[in-house]
Length: 396
Image (cartoon, rainbow, N blue to C red; front, side, top):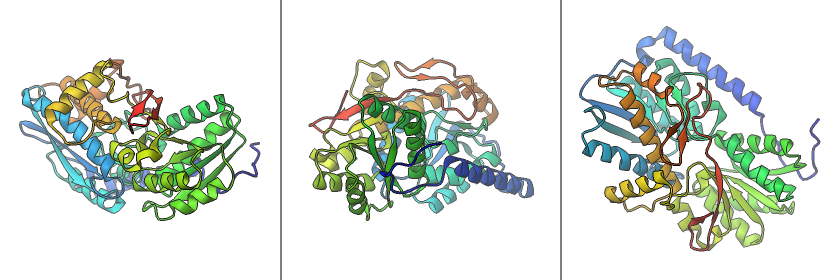
């Protein structure tokens, strides 16, 4: 039995309960499809182009992350279209801003599914949003390609759902393993008060059990970041050796700044979603020394072939944003999509595209491998740690 440490502060619902909720949602979606198939069953698109849709946060607390992800994908798609497209078909990316709001995301995705010209959903953004739209996605059968979330709840055994990035559990495992190797035992976690944050906390708790880290203190932070200073005070009262930051967007800024004001020396570790260029710029010197788990290579390391290709596409796109891990991830996802579409043939259908995605075995993009094994598992295993240097840029 796992012992409870006096350092623990607050519990959270376990992953088993969350999995049960997701199964119920999927069953409810299946029931909707059987009662009202015209509402959810996406018709096969026609025409000379491949239109893909996404609901993503371009504004709101995580808008900077969504903007970077989108621009990275567009850098690749624009380059492909400039050369005539894939098998003679241009790729049109239809983007709907949801402001990191679940209701808006559901409305966006419902509209995209209902549009018979939507070939696939691409890079839909955020754990709460992806969880909310999943029943309709599964019921419709439309390809749900590379959702931007590490949540296990979105790694379902459905062939039309294709995850690339490693899970939050994989990232948490890497961080906790690293801390355990350093002999750090007193760990605290600040996590967002939504399904993303709860999944991060549960993943950290499981990894802590595995590596015999005795107790995890925790505190939640709302999406607005309004209670970030209070959460920092609560965690620092337990005198932790390290704090894991399971936050994204504005809550990250508010929490990190609050921690640095109260105790500069405490070590901070964060998941990949924290590391946008805009976040680092906004944090300034407060970002220095933060260790971040990354799910793609260092975006300025041109020695890696896929990064070199990305930087060339980024320059050609002429975007004003800084190249970042987030932008590189969008670029990589777009490249994988393009490769699957190429393999789907000159007259691709959703079925041939889905078959093509599951035929991507040991695909080497140039230092980043994609291996589609089976539904429910992510196709990438890439995760590494990087450190924010004094320049505000990541270093190894």
